Image 1: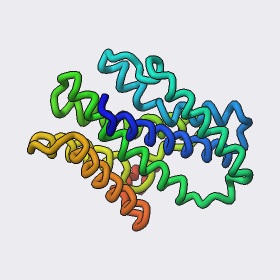
Image 2: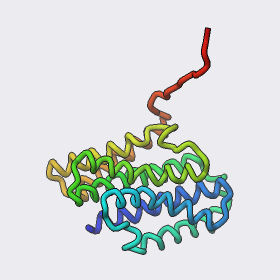
Image 3: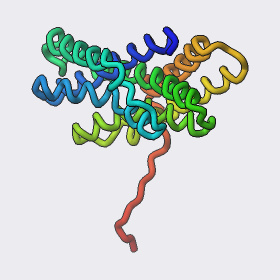
Length: 208
């Protein structure tokens, strides 16, 4: 694992763990609940990806990830005494950083396992969005990916950009940085302008 990928992965775990911990605070969970929500948000997508790829689950072979999640959750509990005072947009921005990072890193890992471009993009998207979906389901919310601004499309953009830029001959750190930036910009634009795909509406009431 290159230095760039390793530290990007650690940063992604931190921001997703922060997102999960803040969500736990908004729902007034106890410290154990904060740890659980931070953990599933941070490693849920990567765990599903590794199971599908038949790879060793990353946090079981590199235990520093568990330590990073625990430390992030603990710092959040100690420093943010009233999570409801934290702007909801801050939670979305933290989630956006994690989405962009994990989408690209998930794609890179799938490619390293000799997966096709389509499979690698799917793995990148799962890595980026699945942790947040698990977090929202635990909190009894419709997952963000299904109801809010551009989300999964941002992850897919990051994945496709990484594949395309590496195909053009750019090094992984440069391609990864540009792809992450593209995914992040699209996601933040969706948050700022509240851009979303058209909602599907079905009225099952019979009308005369």
